[in-house]
Structures are given as C-alpha cells and as structure tokens.
Length: 167
Image (cartoon, rainbow, N blue to C red; front, side, top):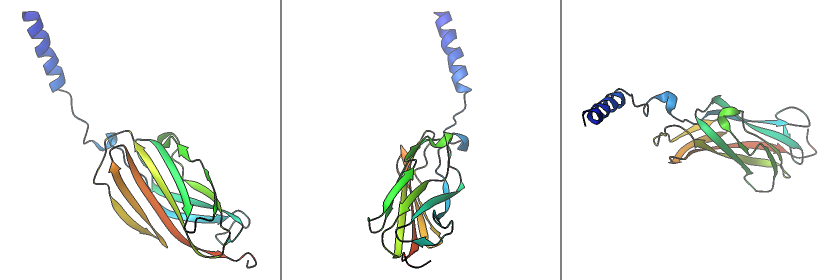
C-alpha cells in the first residue's frame, strides 16, 4: 500500500511541475496577415488587365500564419463569368506558406471585383477573438474565427479591366 501511495504522490508531483502551454503564443495557431492583392497580365507583364487575356491575381502576405496544417483557397469574380485556374487549391500551409495565386480570364471590360476566400485549418491553440476587417488599396480583408477548427480570411479587390482593343 505504501508503494502505491508513494507512486501516486510521485506522479502528482511530476504533473504539478508541468507548465500549461495553452496561452503561450508559440503553441497558438494564427492566420497570415494580408498586405494586398496584386494583378499581373500574363501577356504584357504589367498591371494593365485586358478583357479576354489571362492575368495572375496574387494575395501578398505581410506576415505568415503559424501552426496551420491546411489551407483551402476559393477564387471568384463579381460577375461570375471569369475563368479561374487557382494553383494550388489546397496546401499544407506550414510546409508551403506561399502567397495564394489564381490565373484568371475576364471576358468583359469595366470595373470588376476579384475575391479570394481562404480557410486556414488550425493545429494549435485557437483565438476566437481574432476577428478583424482591414482596408487594402481598392479593397478589404476580413478575418473571421467561425469555429475552433479554422480561420476564414476573405480578400476582395476592385480592378479596371480594359477593353480588348485598348492597350
């Protein structure tokens, strides 16, 4: 009996000495901070986007996320008429924290909006208060924490698409 009691007291002493890391930032998941969304024509290499010509939309991260085991990206345009070829759609974020990109062709000229919704799956502690909206040039970024399983980051940006005859 004394041996069992001694073992229990020893185990209690060991566990009592362990620190809790739930509030330590290095064990907490956080989403990337977005700086801007940029556009680059694949035809001219400039930021002048022409209807019917492919261009790359890139979300530029000012600060990388942390302890995110997965990320899913969904791209769209305001009119729903564009052709999208995102690369990649899903990544293991911590292994490959690149700037999300999409190759887009918009068939019509005029003022348009591009939207990227990212779902970052958490693998560390979760901050339910991590909700914010920030402005970027000609757009905005919203950060949401709908559940402890993931963060959602939505980036929207407006752009002027030139007619195909204008260069």
